[in-house]
Amino acid sequence: MTLVLIGVNHKTAPIALREKIAISREDLPETTRALAATPGVTECMIVSTCNRVELIAAVEGLEIPLHGFLASYFGIDAMVLEPHLYEYRDREAVSHLFRMAASLDSMVVGEPQILGQVKEAFAVARAEGAVAGHLDHLLQSAFAAAKRARSETGIGSNSVSIASVAVEMARKIFGSLSGRTVFLVGAGKMSEIAARHLVQQGAGAILVSNRTQERARRMAEEFNGRVIPFAQLHDAASEADIVISSTGAPHPIFRPEHGRAFLHARRNRPMFFIDIAVPRDVDPEMNKLDGIFVYDIDDLQQVAAAHMEERSRQAVDAETLIAAEVERFHQRQRTVNVAPAIVALQRRAEEIRVAEIERIHARLGTLTAEQLAAVEALTRGLVNKFLHPPMQALKQAAREGDSARLEAVCEEWSVSTAACNGTEAAAPAVKGPEAEQPERGLRSVAETRR
Image 1 (cartoon, helix red, strand yellow):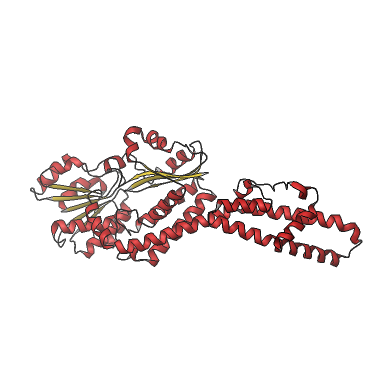
Image 2 (cartoon, helix red, strand yellow):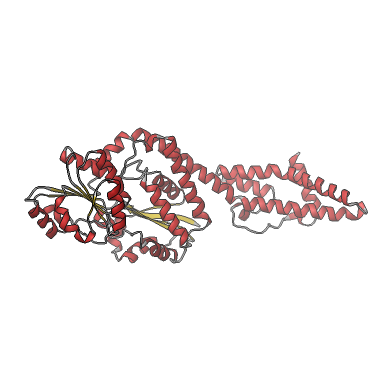
């Protein structure tokens, strides 16, 4: 089995491409099912945020066409998509996933939203039956590593996010947000975070609109704002100096004809749109109108870069911690993978022990229950003591990733290489004289022990 992670993010692909393969929360279950149905995929999940779309899959075989899945599912020319894709396998895939969950791969290093988004993607995949033991263990380890990074380094201090960066950009544009009217279009988590920062910066009136009226009402009440019914969105937008839009709409909800109407109503006073949605809520053609200024999520990278410089030392500490967690994960995996060899060793030793007792049973005569129990306890204790060195050697070799030593231990203690590699479920047959005279197997173990 191979772990494969492929995707695009804000570093590799422009927003114009990312929005073509963005997966809404409503569509994520269906898309996950489609990926799980791909031949060769045994487990999978999909992470889709405003900055990335990534497929994480456990596959049988090396050439599973996950690239083809993205291109065909979204109807994109593979030649257009391919240059923007990155792919990681096995150890590199684990490392990337751990870093992503810890927000070390985010546009704003340290932003807290990505961990919740990965957890949500994992919950969807599990609900769809697309996750089993391997990915479950991997994701639980990634969540634990991310939690450690946030709690044990300064990466989570002075928490920032895309929404907070958007507000900072608005503040830089106006110099001060005091008295400015802000229109929040979309009442999701991003808008809530933006509203908190806006209030802290002294914004004046706050307008809130959302397709679900109740969510807009709750947010407006929390921030002393005013609800605008979504059907009246374009009628009220001209009141705002700043529009921060973050909806799940599949197409732009603000287009050039709306912009011209806004400018007319505002008597050409400038209006700023900060679009943090993917797909974009604001048609980029709006930027061509004099007096309309549009900033999308890729434009926020300049502001985010300043945060990255400020957090560089904390990020280094977090990178070190995550690298150690990745190594711990692989050590645990290697120990798990050697379990079949240990089981085979224990099973064969038990076969030899039982055979020896049966062989000498006639010479011992009739034994009481207490005497039989004593013989059982004695022989089991001896076998456990004899097995302790090879089992510890197997585990140590597995933890260190020393395949040559692992095979040497297996060969020395008559355990097949297949079992050492974790591919043999049944106990291996013992070759040579031990197969005919089981007692000699125990004797050779004892001699090696000495």
